[in-house]
Each structure stands twice: as structure tokens, then as C-alpha cells.
Amino acid sequence: MKFVDEAFFSVKAGDGGDGCASFRREKFIPFGGPDGGDGGDGGNVYITGNSSLNTLSDFRHKKNFMAKNGEQGKGKKQTGKNGEDLIIEVPVGTLIYDDDLQDTLGDVVKDGQKLLIAKGGVRGVGNTRFKSSRNRSPRQFTKGTLGENRNIYIELKLLADVGLLGLPNAGKSTLVSSLSDAKPKIADYPFTTLHPSLGVVSVGEIRSFVIADIPGIIEGAAQGVGLGINFLKHLSRTGLLLHMVDVSPEASILDIVQAFKVIEKELWESQENIANKERWLVFNKIDTINKEDHQKILDQVANTLQWEGPVFFISAVTKEGTDQLKNSIMEYIEKYD
Image (spheres, helix red, strand yellow):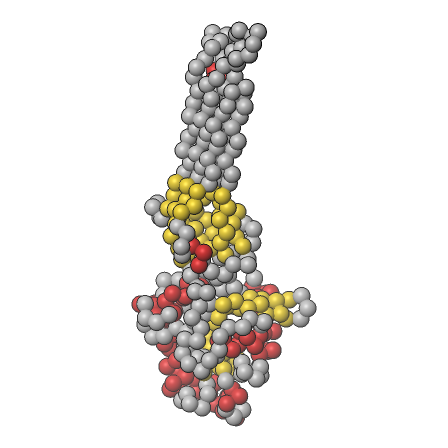
């Protein structure tokens, strides 16, 4: 299924039903009086969060959503039936905007959260309501009001505790599959990951966190080059970023430093305020180098980059060092969440 993280569509709440102008007409009751009932209220349009959804692909083809109108009032003081509400399901993490007014209508951050985006019209009243001592046979009634009509823009920003970033083939998908039950596509060519995926990482019996695998970012991503620009926004909701760098023998110290600086530059140029987030440096693929080289790489790279944050050496393939990384992440989340 193609990953879709933004969509445009229109919504129309139901119109209120008109009131009824009617008079009681029964045998042997010559002066029955007014008995017109009220109309029904129009249905509202709601957006609700559904944690089982992870893409906005349902909105690729359906662009118009309409709630039911309220029914018209009837004689014998019968009130029209209210219009049925329309509920539109979106993934948790979806932002909702009024596209015409450029206003934010809400942010769906919980499963089952319900947000009113278009209010139904109000019912009209029947002529029974206008009866008085001075007006015993009123013919007045009111029409129901129109339901709201909006053009909606929605944007999905995945909710995760931890986000992975790095150049293509840094090993992000492999790490997600190693730590969680998620099964992202893994191969030895760039851009294996074409859309973000989430994995739940268990730490012990009752502790866990959510990790997001974001497609590889390349140089110029913040200006629209490659896939990264489409998905940088998904990192904006994460509390912690793991900056993964390939340290396999094919990568020289210069290559490692350059790989880091490419991502660093794109983070500062993005519009999502990502560069200021807590970020840890993760050297991956240490199973391909000698252990004696670990400290050498750390010293050279850290000195060149003037890096002062946490550093981890792991192998996502063999899981070497991943337990320490996992436990450190859990401790950080529990401390700062």
C-alpha cells in the first residue's frame, strides 16, 4: 500500500430539517388548532483517531464527505428525525486544518479522540410553537439552517518516542526489525524504505517504547531532493533522535564525518525544528570492523565533530550493543517523558 501522509477533502454537515405548518384535522373536532412539529437537527461531521491506521491512503479517491440532513417536521406534532452524524477515521498523529481559513482545527493524538470539524444545521420549528392567546391559528414556521461546509487539509505526523535518521543504508530498518516485531523491507540498495514504519520495542515485561524508521535523507532533502523532505516532519513529534552512521570498512573516517554533516545540515535547514531535539550518535555495523578500531573511530570522529552527546556502537544485524542502547533509551524516556 502506498504511504500517504497528507490529503485534501471537503466535508458538509447535514442541514436542519424545516418545521411544519399543519393543523389538526379530525372528525368532530372543528377547531383542532396548529399541530406542526419541529424539524430534526442536521448531522455533525467528526474526525476520530484510529490507532490501527497508519496512512491517509483512504483519502486518495474519496474527496467529499456529507453527513445526513435532519428530517422535516410533520403534522400531529411529530418532530423530524435528527440527521446521522458522520465519523471520519484517521491515524493517530493527524493534524487537521481548515484549508480556506488556514486555521488549525485540532490535533488527533489519542486512539478514539473525537474532533468536531463541521456542525450540523439547527432544526426549524413548527407552527405549534407560535400559538398564543392572540394567535390561535398561526401559519408561521421556520426553516432549518444549513450545515457547515469546509475544505479540509490533514497532515499525518507519526507519533513515536524515538526516531531514526541517517543516510540510506545506514541500517535503520535493520535496527527496527532487530529491536521490535516490525518487519520493514531490508535490502542492500539505497531507498529500501519508501515510507515510515513504526515498531514497538519491549523492555522487560511491562515497559516499552515506539520507534520510527524514517526513509533515508540525502543531501538537499530540505530543499526537496530525494525522499527525505517528505518525511522530515515525522521526526518533529519524537522525543529522541538516533543519528545512525555506517562505520563498515568501506567507510573512511572522512566518509563517516561527511555522512554525519550531510544529515546535520538538512536538520538545521528543515522547517520542523528538529535540529534542537535530543540526539544520540549510533555507529552501526561494528560486526564488520575490529573492536580495537571502535575507540579509534570514536576519538577521531568525536574530535572532528566536537560531539559531546551520547555515543553507541552497535550491530543491528548481530544485535551486539543493542540491549545497552535499548535500555538507555527506556531510561531516557522514563526520565524526561
